[in-house]
Image 1 (cartoon, rainbow, N blue to C red):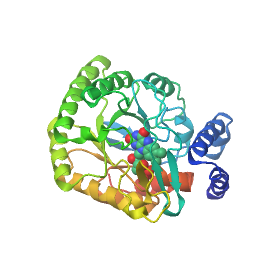
Image 2 (cartoon, protein in one colour):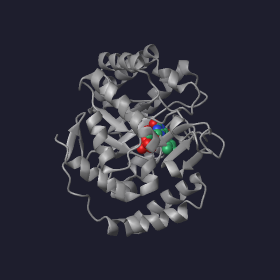
Image 3 (cartoon, protein in one colour):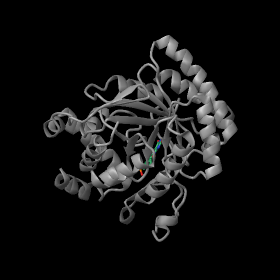
Image 4 (cartoon, rainbow, N blue to C red):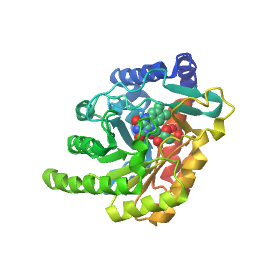
Length: 345
Ligand SMILES: Cc1cc2nc3c(=O)[nH]c(=O)nc-3n(C[C@H](O)[C@H](O)[C@H](O)COP(=O)(O)O)c2cc1C
């Protein structure tokens, strides 16, 4: 429904980006509850499911973390054709995030700069929201983080709290080490810090698997701002530590591609079209270092079927979108999911 979305977008883009976000999410929930979305999208498309990390994904396209931070719009978003939805980032305690404004559209670049700072309702609310989702048949990932006021020395405690709470309802857990908007968070991508954290979380995962009788894969999400030696070092840590999956990438601090834009110097992470090439480079480098031993979810700048396929070409098995979905609407979900359907298993 590109025409309907063009109208909705013209209206929504009259508001500041964060108000537009809340309006569109509320609108989606209303459209789901009132029966309008089920009428427009009665059945999920018949695409080939794929098994990755022991999970059955109805298709290879997912929604990246940050759009449905609380997990309260899963059914409506699922209706649009996503095979998986990653909610969060969710922290142990609710937190307000950074002062507004903190979300900016760079329309000419199909890009977004955000410094939201993990505004979320906390892990209890996230778990409750997932429990009350009804119709979504796909995979639900929990993206977890630490509270802003938790020092990095104690970060593992925050991840453990979220891991334990989310484990019974999550299909996978994504550990966010790469948001640029929580001071010091990216330091957890240092090889030693990362190895320690992975060891602690893997140990807990094994205990939880025994308690709950199910294996919930553990993924780490990394930044695009990593140089080749750092990528090689992290890949070794991930292989040796038994990581189940990698999500690459989060937003970038680099502003080169948008340097002419009046908003270019806003603090935060840049996503969307200008991130695509860099994200693909990082995916390619990790894929080469990992040699297929750990599946990669490729994310960053996907805005067409061709972009989605380029993520697979770079070495990803699954693909996520966020920013350019805001600019293009539901048509992008179907186009990417269909294109990825043609990829050999
Ligand atoms: C407004 C906004 C908020 C985001 N919040 C999160 C978040 O809470 N946790 C996270 O891991 N990634 C977050 N991201 C990053 C996205 O999940 C994704 O990795 C990144 O935007 C690159 O994909 P894209 O170019 O398709 O948007 C956020 C992105 C945006 C634009």
